[in-house]
Image (cartoon, rainbow, N blue to C red; front, side, top):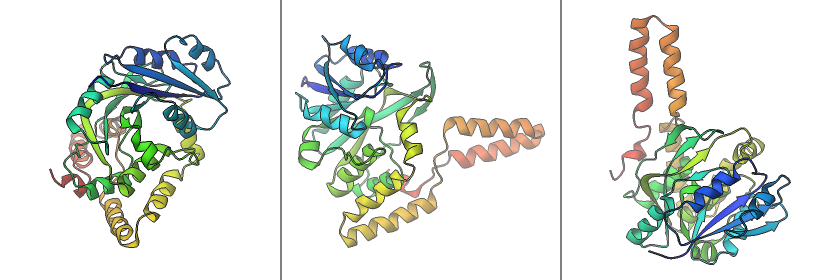
Length: 303
């Protein structure tokens, strides 16, 4: 595949990490790329930084509409049929787009959203954790969707989607100031029958830092994920909605919230530090078995 791919980069007060984000786009091994940076009413030096790359990127400035509004502006101005989203504080691995476009040829289905795994980095760019999702590629659609209702397991910065996804089925919902990506995936999968297809490779580095917009927005709108689920389920006919509601309740009962690697390590170290060595070792072994076992019966379907 050598089709043009559009990388859409919404930018809002991102001066600290913007250069590195852009450089990771320039460094892609897949060369047929256009970069569309949407300056969403930034008040810092973000626009100046973008203008310094004006010969390599397309820049669109607008009044602040929020992340969804900025993404939609980028999609509507794409010259290509393939949409790749990028955060202004994240980093793409050099072969990210090449891997995604290669998988497009294998899957060959416009109603399949391809995504990958990723690393977490801190404000200094050091890898501090990883996100490795289970492979659901052979699951039936219903159980894929139940897992998606359980939690948003797709990082949209690792995805690639056909432009028709938006022109035919709807753009990002601009009324949401958080979880706009989750709303998009639930809408596409539950309402329109899209499948989610993972590439079991790391495609990007997702930056965690104090000024992170997603963190700030989540604190401001903590109930949005639950509201998104409720809104999407209400779009289904009563029989289908009831089926999903029952399965979702069962999912919640049989699943603990995922425990991150760092949290597991901290708890384990606390046990080893605060208890007598022999007792601590026994409790630590039991604890590790509990947190590492498969948390859901849904994770056993079709495997």
